[in-house]
Length: 211
Image (cartoon, rainbow, N blue to C red; front, side, top):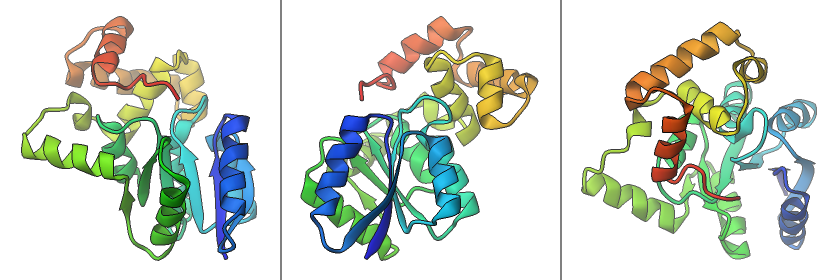
């Protein structure tokens, strides 16, 4: 049995995915979590083999949670769940330590297959994501957000969620001053001056896709 931890802040989504996985005799959903913070706590108490991780969640978010899980439990295989099929998010997740990337419109069979594949130590990318990454590289498309570090990208996502510098510092366990330093670096790398310009740029790169 593959022990799975399911992480999503929408109860309806959690219930639906849990029902799908429960119908597969080779998969056991050992826990469900509604946030990155809760996922880390549950993983500490009962280490899963595979984590299905929603990306767009309040608080820490999926990218930071994936990074921390990978650092603390290298044996855990994380599969990201997202609406983003292109842009910087897939690359950021793989850099953070994810072994797989699924779109939320994936079929039940594809989800099960992805879990089985990463459990064997292999990687899995949804076909649409793989195609977008391949052709972007082939066409030498520039993505400004790819220049950001994992921490800088996390600050971007939290800024887009409307978190204050103090709130970001609490979530990331760093000082507000350090958060401000990261945000200054982000603005410099993206050649922008404020949150309004960041939001506009995020819209251009489809970072504000609905869940």
